[in-house]
Image (cartoon, rainbow, N blue to C red; front, side):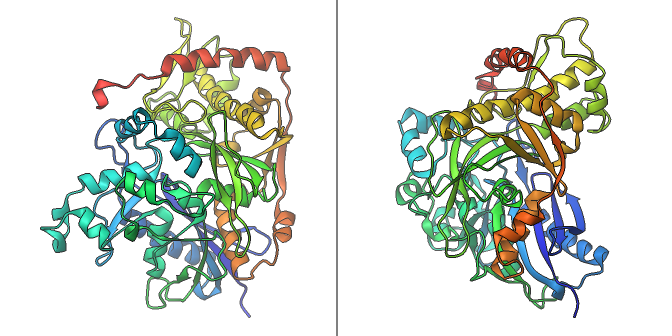
Length: 512
């Protein structure tokens, strides 16, 4: 009998990956394709959902082909996705009415400021666990319904988009829902992605009528919300479709929750930080939704079939890996691997701080009008100092979150599990350990986002029986312990707040 595997579609901000895992959680296949980043105006970021779907089909087929695995050997498919990125599409044709608005998109900042002025921020936080911010899906959906061009749809030349949405002719979803719909024909999301829309009551576990009314989002266009690992399944792929097989689609988590799951952070107090385009630090808080007094988000960590929701505290940092990409864009480095060599060639930044607030600042500052800032330069500043300061900014932003997390939860993290592309950089991992004065554990399989969604799908279909099996799969590649004196780390960190202060509230009239 042929071996069976679990596949994971990892649809990220810059590209789409398909990975296949065996029973030991080892990678059997890995295929990746980038998609276009669309910037119609300053602060606006869009993706073409059709390009994402075509790329998804391509990478799934490429992964199967490269591993010489037949689609029938997939016991299940899991999905993980860039969160908050929002698609509205025509239920009949399956065509989007507008490009997806990406989580980084800031075009609805004015709308968020209206909510703040109207005193609605606390109500939103109490229901959703989220700060009122353009980051989330609610204002993005509202914007699309207000601004997408109805004439793009052949069947709706004389009908308002909201009328069509109320009649169930338009569907809304985050990228997981878009992919599940295209894979299975069913309009479904999971609890973790629902919790990122700013429309979902995370304790009542339902779409909130008052928030739907506030943003004029008809409930008829919203997906059904299911557990992250769903024994009832989200559906099956079409045997006559691109895979030529009926494969169960059984698990989905937003990318950061998927990494939490892939890092086997199943118990209250377990924490991980994922270094991707941005960085996202999550701590499992168990069955309690811990509210934050320090600018963190309360969110849903995951839900297994028939089990209570597990909650998490989250620190969302909008730009970390993207700051390294910026160094490439401005020709300070040729590739990301150069950063360690250049940064370690100098003993310090000589007082230079980079605040990479290219799309505003997330936790704990929550300033959508902050912008990227470099302070402390002198005539002697060289690119090595700027590169080192950029890496230090990643560590400082993470310390901001670590301190807030400890204050909110009362739990001191002894070891932080890390993953994502940037953790291949040993210099950054050691720097991170030094700045937050905490051990850093890097796992052997660092694509934990894809692994988490594979685990969720595999558990749903019985490919793995228990989470204890998954814990035994987790292996440390390397552990980093602080080498810097805590007083030196505190001294370096002490001026970070001064640098951040200079970046705040910068973008004003030019983006209105």
